[in-house]
Image (tube, rainbow, N blue to C red; front, side, top):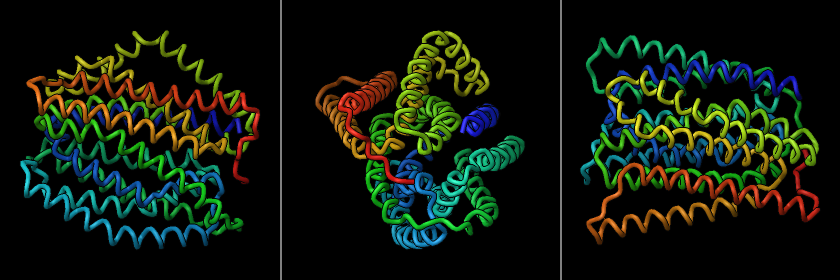
Length: 413
């Protein structure tokens, strides 16, 4: 387990740094408004992706689902995707027609196609992780994304079309090529004799999908509110500020949280809790010690983006805080799921989304009934505050469970 974990950390760290720098280089060739245009279909189809994934990704890793289980899951989800996906695309088209939004039809179609293709990607990826092939699938995704990044960086200056089309094309090709590679690579592993655990997997995923939906809705409420209140250029700046923080947080989650979840599912609950609290304390101390370095690193990354994104330099501290809080929350999520605390996690997520909805409704009410306006920094401050509250509630839950001395209900492997 130690070899698996440290191998994953090393390789995924290297992959993530390279991809992050290429992402910044690509963004330097585009405008903030390009990211603002694709934001709404990106948000809406992210919810559709969650519906298709259904919380089963974590369950497949935990229970190492059999071939028959995977086939049954894919069939059921494909039927949902074919019925619901086109309906969502049609609703976006109607929304664009009856509002001041400008969402090109081809962008909507590209995101719809990407979501349907992801259907098998989720479950193939989870099965390979369950078989200990985490580094391999990260390498595939890294290689494909690097090729696409370099291709677009070369092509964009040569072709005069709106930048949001390039973003939609990149998303579609990444999902498609990655899916093809996964489905080829998985064949020797999907045929391994694994005992069916579909019932336990479905029970486990029922709580996970609710938490995932609540988390996703909560993470997008601010952007949906901002989309109503500010223009596409300012929205693009806000979205990019948050995106950089979450992107680095996601990379750190891939580096630490994903392999940690795999390891935590295999070791004793007591060891899981000890490692978690030690790791959390260490990361908090490291954040405090390295804060100035992280702010300088963010400034350097923004300089790579070029003159179109100079306003991002006003939000350095928010990028760092969003990045670190995203990692802390995801690291704790993985720990709670590995310990069988998915129901407790669901309760926390419900509280968080309730708090977030209440805060943004208050903001919208103030704007409608007064002349007061909120700028980007207010939205970012609320995002950081809510993530801190989320982490505190998670830690309290873990401490209470430890002090209660009741056995944690961890599903059998």
